Image 1: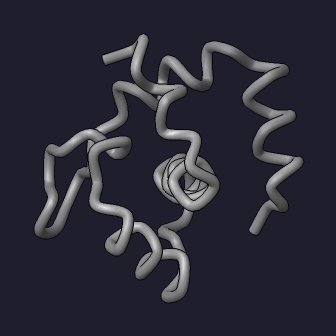
Image 2 (image 1 turned 90 degrees about the vertical axis):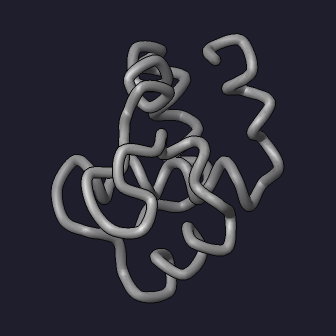
Length: 80
């Protein structure tokens, strides 16, 4: 998994990634069709411990995890 600095530098270097993340929906499970940014923090932490899915979904969930555990959810406020 990426380190915090890597996630944040990636978001800074690609602002479109934050916009995409703000619109990305969970494709399966209990929270199917919910925006990733609206997933409950304990659920995201559970995934972090179990392992994120592969591919783009896993990458997006890892970013959401870093944002939530670092208290940066306000970054999504202008995008809601």
